[in-house]
Image 1 (cartoon, rainbow, N blue to C red):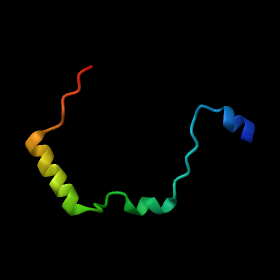
Image 2: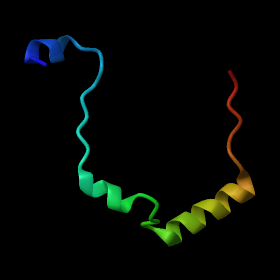
Image 3: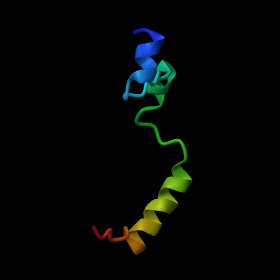
Image 4: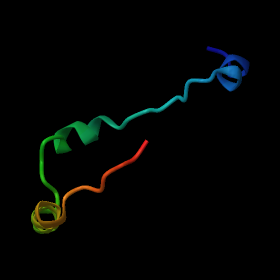
Length: 50
């Protein structure tokens, strides 16, 4: 695509780094994840009214 076509396009162009794939499925912050799960189990998610 030419630059003019990209500027007029409504679709964003995103380039992902291939190194991010090795992080898929890994828990990077296990302590924070455990704490967040505990808080969510006690309070739950807020109800969203439409």
